[in-house]
Amino acid sequence: MSSYKQASHVFWRCQYHIVWTPKYRYRILKNKVGRDVYRSINVYCEQLGCEVLELSVQLDHVHLVVMVPPKLSISKLMGALKAQDSVKALQ
Image (cartoon, rainbow, N blue to C red; front, top):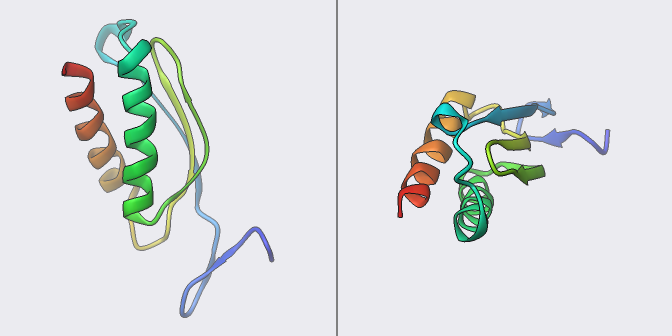
């Protein structure tokens, strides 16, 4: 049971492998942009109560393995992450 988390009335292990790419798979996630995206994903996942198990920011895509609590939907998590990361990539 150690790999499971416990809430008030439930044991859970909602683990997702998520991959996403910039538009047209442009190679923009390098140098400072890649580091900022990596850092912002960790910060926002922590704020939302998620646990990042694996994270890899490549030149043209991002791999993320994350444990998400049942009270948070994947669409809300991805909406928050992609919105913040798109702002970082444009700066």
